[in-house]
Structure formats: C-alpha cells, structure tokens
Image 1 (spheres, rainbow, N blue to C red):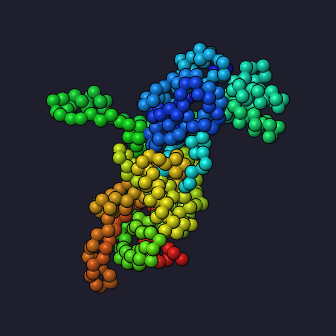
Image 2 (cartoon, rainbow, N blue to C red):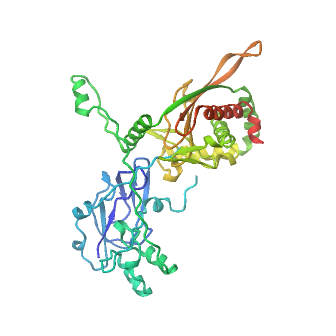
Image 3 (cartoon, helix red, strand yellow):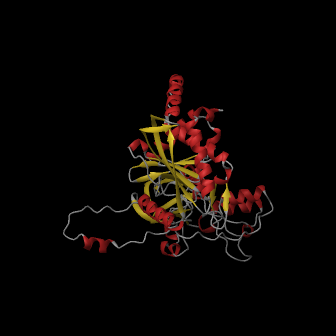
Length: 437
C-alpha cells in the first residue's frame, strides 16, 4: 500500500516551509529514522526523518520549492513491486485537516536530544480504530503485527494521518495492554496577523516614487505576527534603573587575566545573564510565564538572550543558568549565537524560558524598551555603559553607568514584584564577586 510523506511541522509556529534539498531519489529504499530531506522553517534549516519504511515511488515536491504548507504530500513510498499509480491522490490528502500548532516560542533558540527533528516532527498519536473499521498501517507494521499476534485495531497510530507504523507495533509488543484512547488536544489559535493596509493600497500612496519591494520570508512573517500579538495582548509596563559598572568592569578584567590560559574571555553580557538568573531565584514569584488561564511558576532560571541575525533574530535559551559558572555561560552563549547566525539551532534550543535579555549596548544604544516575548513574564533591555557624573553622598564623581529597562507583563508580575526583581539584578551587577559565592 502506498504511503504519503507529508510536509512536517518542525516547530510550533511553522505553517509552511521550503523543501531545501532531497537526500533520496526516486527508487531508493528508505528505513524508519533515515534522514531523507532538508527543510527550511521560519527559523532554521532542519533535517527530516522518515517515519515509515519502503521505496521512494515519487517525489511530489521539487528541491527549492517554497511555501509548502504543513501536511501537504511531498513524496510517496511504495512497497517493492508496487506501482507508483497505487499512491493516493494528492488532492484527496490535501483535503485532510492540516495545521501546525501555533504555540509561543520561548525562547532565546540546552542541549539537543539525539534526534530533535524526529521529536519535533512526530504527530500526536490517534485513538485506536473502531472494530470493523479499515486500519491504516504501513506494510512493515502489518507484517510485524501478524507475526506477534497483535490486533492492529487496538493500536494508536503515530504516523502521518494516524497511520500505524513499526514503532507503534513494537511499543504494543513491549506493553501488551493498549493505552486507553485519549481525547484530542484542542488546536491552538492561529498566530495573530498584523492588521495593516494591503500592499496595493500602500503602493498607490507611493506611486511615482522609486523603491525596492522586498517579499517577507518565513522568519519576518513570524516576527511580525508575534510582536503584533505581544503588543496588542500583553499589558506591558516598564521599570528603569541605572547600574554603576565600575566594580564589575574591574572584576571582569581581573577574571579575564586569570582565564586567559584557558582561552576564556568573559563579556559584560555574561555577567548580566548570571545576574538575571540569580535574581530570578532570589525573587521566585517573578520567575513565571503566562499560560492563558493560569501562571506557570518556574523552578529553574532558563534565560533567553536575543541574538540578531540577517533578516531577523533568535532568542536561544540558556537553561539552568543559575547553576552554571560564568565561563560555562560564556562558552554556551558563544556556541548558541554562532549557530543562530547560521540558522542551525534546534527548536528546543530557542523555545521555552521565562525571562529574556535584549542587549543593544554594544551598538551604542543607551536605553530602549523591549517587547515581551510571550509567554515570558518579562524582558530586560540593556543599554551601553557610559561615563557620567554621579553623586555619592555629598561628593560628585565620574562613574560608568548602564541604563536598563525591565518590560513586565502585568498579568504575571505586579509593580512591587517587578521592582524587587530589578533591585536584585542591580545588586548582583554592582557586587559581582557575590555572584561567585
């Protein structure tokens, strides 16, 4: 029986993708778990693994094809000796419900699992078939079930469109009692789309003027939708503090001299990450995310950091940041940032987190307000350190001062709680040696 291979949802926000490269050709034999294609999502280029086994009967989508909707057939697998004409019609499959779950990203893109793509691409298992109903199963799954005396109608399929595959049979063989059917999870609401004038309307406004039209890629569309949603639905408020950096800069210089033989060079941003992670532990009620009708209070400090890339940005997440040394945070951040710029991060590396940092100080920006990345409870906007006159007691002196603005989701964090969090961050930065205690 012919089996359709569908365009997978490789991230919660993915609605369509680009089939960048086929790693198999028509006539090739593929096995479950084999990497068969490279697919560009709105965030990264990822490898796609086959779920079923068989021979590639036909490649339905050519390399380089953009805008392929999730759950659209992209190839057909057939059994040896089976004609490609036995494949189901593409139009019939296209009428099946298809949607990528649109969940908030978390974020700034920990260590990937051995097969992150398989986990991200695997669809939810479907309930067992009713008695007497035709069961959709791969040829290998049927053969294994027959050999083991397993009734296919009692199994839940995890393959495309609920098809029973080898893994389902093997799992049933290991655990004879089939799991009870579970109710399907409600599909998430689609991401908010920016409300604005149409391209034709705007073009009429600039008729006769020279301009270059730049089509939106997947990343830009996602950024536009998510930031519009954030500003329209999240009640932001802002808390501002100045930080004196002189102690931190002197301490950083001392540490970098000691770490030089190891090839480690700490940045001010590494100290900011550590300071925020420890502050979230000191003010645990602020280490929280908004979950629609409830709040999730997180235990670990998973801190996301915005990384600018060409055409957009990533927010890779440093998990358990409160437990890591400054040198470990520095090394991990450099690795995540480098792979973000080449779009090689796995989804679990830029999703999650409860708090984010956006630092434009290295670009000369002294202060700004950042937009919260849902479902985070807050984001810290960090400006440049600038030499300024300061008052200490009755004396006027010169100090390096850095401006910070904390954007807060008022549904999650109230004003006094946000102020406590900001105070803890400032104290950590102005007394950096205490962060090593």
